[in-house]
Length: 351
Image: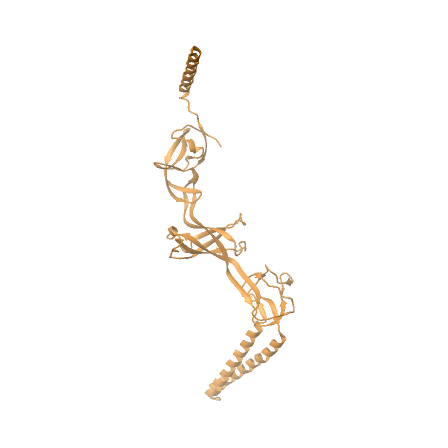
């Protein structure tokens, strides 16, 4: 029993000695290592992010309108037959459908000559009528003959044009089905698909709470993961005033400038719609703001100690926020090590 009592007494003495040591060190406060940055004025943008698929502003699928023997034209830029990915100009002939029988039946040369003769006759009758040498009926008959000849010639041109498949606008060949050269193809077959995606459009669905923020002509940034170093720009072109009753979202359309043809139709992209901006403001990282009972707070360093500041905020985006009250230019803002700070904590500034 004596042995057990002695052990208890010794343990108690050690415990008292330990407590006394803590009390002796209570006046020493360890400096908390922090990183700071000087507050500077800088621009900030508030934007709404959405995603969607981009589409070409011009797209045409061309089918054959007549039968003929298939012949692919040669691209003068490459000196080889046209192929997928080739850039083409408006009205440039891509495919010929040779049909000598049809071409002969159209008689384009005869109709051109008929048009020339009827025009001369019409001019002659007009001159005679003005001089009293022809009747009004003669004048109108000549005009009628000229008009019929003109319509006949134009119709022949239309029929001949069907024997050529041309690009309807400047663009890129995105589909060119293969047909054996020289084989006869029928009318109604898929011949060519051309897209112009120098400009693209994208439809996005945005949350209903943003309806009052989205306006026509607002600037939009567009990014794609395959183009990490390239940001394209566009603008809002249409905004629906109604919400989808199922999703509580509304539709908006974006027109995207794509001058270097970097984005391709069908790509999935991210869009940042800029709804507000400030050219010069106090802007801080969003992730350093602490939410406390008295409001949003951050820390600055003054005379080797942390000073807690309650702030008011304005514009914000996923990374940054504008501070409208509570901070001043050139103050040293704590950006690392703030998690354990208290008001007037001693700090040690480290990189």
